[in-house]
Amino acid sequence: MKAFLLLVAIFLFSNQAETATGQSDPANIACYQSGGSCRLSCLSPGVVSGDCAGGLVCCIWPRQRPV
Image (cartoon, rainbow, N blue to C red):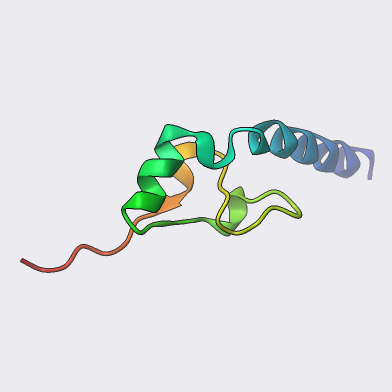
């Protein structure tokens, strides 16, 4: 049980640290400008779905149109 609580605490702390970057992160701006969205696993509790911390790893890129 203690290990689980420790993992939860680490998860919450690391998410709060990342939330500070949000959309100001150039990688996130590039993601949104291309029509992409953020993976739900990258969102902190209470963060708007459009605000993604974690850069391009968290980006869901739109499917490319066939040429």
